[in-house]
Length: 462
Image (cartoon, rainbow, N blue to C red):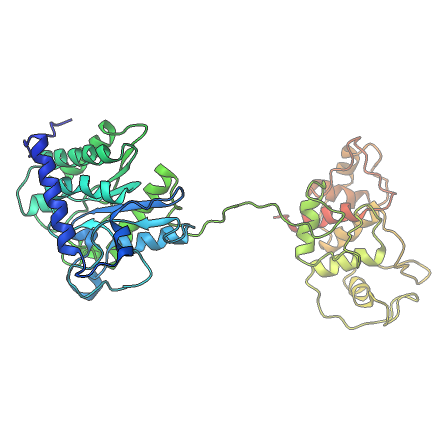
């Protein structure tokens, strides 16, 4: 690492005198002519146990630029908004701190209200200025985090070397720690400009990265934020040096991501309003299908689509057999509830039957034919093999010979079993796996929970 020499050689007693004089000067310059007693609280620490105090430190890029209307802003405005949207309540949980709260133009920021203007930043400041002011500012405002973006004026105005500028930043960190040993420091790399100082900026940014390694401690971490990569001076600057609104927002986004990844503060920039419980437990739709029910997901999925609706008492009755009328009703709803003109197909299903539409639709679609005696028997239970046949027909009878697959999968199914082809199709499609003893039990009634599983898996077929 290159030697970071800084540019001060004053003895400690002289440094203390300079800081005291500087502190008195800016307090005098910015104090109101008549100070109410309660305003004195601004000059002492009011940190609460849960309040995050952030001090932005820098020059006109931090304070604000007195240019066109689009430049009458600062990254601080966007960063503050983001942190608030991330769940930090203004004042009680989040406070930007520092002695300066006005735009240097005197005209105000392009958005004056609803954000905290406080910062330690002055247009034209160099690393020497921030270094000399930081001790008194940290003692007065007690920040938890410093956001340091300074250095470009060292190269533009003073022809200072990157090594000396970085040495001043190192001294800034030391002085801040003298007042608060656990302070967190974010060192921002300088964005590119259209001025002829890019070589100095690149060198200085690399030195800041080195500082983050050498100055970092367990109690007072130091990290960097990359403002150089992807920052286009044409698109993101107002005048080739000061950010426009787009540039301010980009700077804020980089600070926000580092605050989150390094310190757990706020949220990632692309997720400004995170759910404090990103995967909360769902609330069961039915009182008898709790979260740990083996078919909870399938039943809830169909309930969300209103394919299944349960009973008036709020239950689903998962182990109850599915009736023939319910079986065709489920398929009708999966089909989207198409319009149907009733026709008398069965002696026991008249126009006033509660499932007349669904049963008529099933006949018209070739899904069911009823019994040879002209009845449908709507309340009779459906067997597992008949349920397989209904779903197979609903799927337009996929081509293939699946009976052998059914016989291979289940010990109680042969190629001669009624609806063996349909059962085999269910196996091949992954709709059924049968029971743990390798049986399908084709002749028993299909339960409501099993039917829900079949339908949910069918809907998920590619």
